[in-house]
Length: 193
Ligand code: 5GP
Ligand code: MG
Ligand code: MG
Image (cartoon, rainbow, N blue to C red; front, top):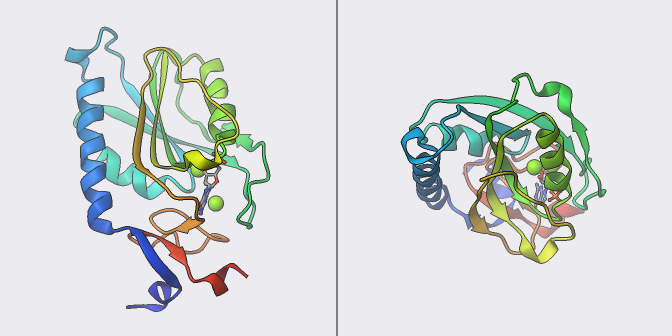
């Protein structure tokens, strides 16, 4: 056990659970996006929402068995605190690829209030994506404030429903730390002060 683990009160989703679930999501995505199984054979562009989705995206795409491109977009709403500041800012300049006419799979760490997706999806839609799907590791339905609409034949994939706790690990940070933990957990109460 290292110093990072010492700050953790409780593991919510273990490395093994995450890995099993990621493999299932990837199989489903492979089936759904396989050229032979859809009417619109267009290359898939996987767009990760930086920074939180980086680890999930890496594990997910290495289990997806169809050709795909990877890009990142940045949307920030949290700052260094644990309470969302509302409407996120989108740094669209980070999207390098042209998504016109492409099927986009947006990869998120968590859907919380819904603010991020309700800004990002219309933004990507305006760049001409022919469908927009979302794959999120976690979903906190108890905290939803805004709804979002998928685009075209877009589907919604979710790893786990998450209880209403502020989580860290497996990409999730608090003030940019803990992202490198291989599991998702909750910090000891004194760490939140
Ligand atoms: P939204 O409220 O817009 O749906 O989510 C905004 C972002 O807040 C998420 O993408 C994620 O980066 C961050 N977020 C939401 N819940 C948590 C949490 O429990 N832990 C951490 N570290 N970040 C969270
Ligand atoms: Mg995020
Ligand atoms: Mg954050």
